[in-house]
Image: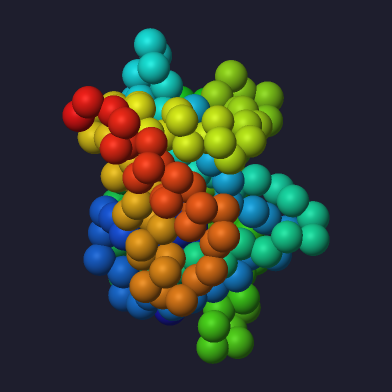
Length: 181
């Protein structure tokens, strides 16, 4: 019997993993934070008008809650190939295995994608600047605001509190009212 491959979803993998997990369970990654610290020039923005997407950023003392998704036995290579094609579209993310604490007390190691600070897509903006960018950007898979709203709603549905995402979701709705869509 081989060891289960776990994937940690903290953003769009929560609501669009791209595979059918054998198990989905709330999980915590200690020492990490979810942040709109990565510009998107493909999926949620363009080179002319970059959007922002979430990335997992190393932050000692922080905890990021998300979903641990187990890959069905025998599908490991296929799922990893899919995720690498999706997540490693640029040099912004690095694939890592990190420890997770599952909601039922189990401890597992999971594959996840973390921001590389030495890439050109790493940014650190205040929340208002993030909201203005997210309200206007659109990429090949749709408006940046849809990415934010989907993630915030799914985290809320899971009972995961993320005050920054909640604030951004409200603020972007206000900003979007002023945009001629």
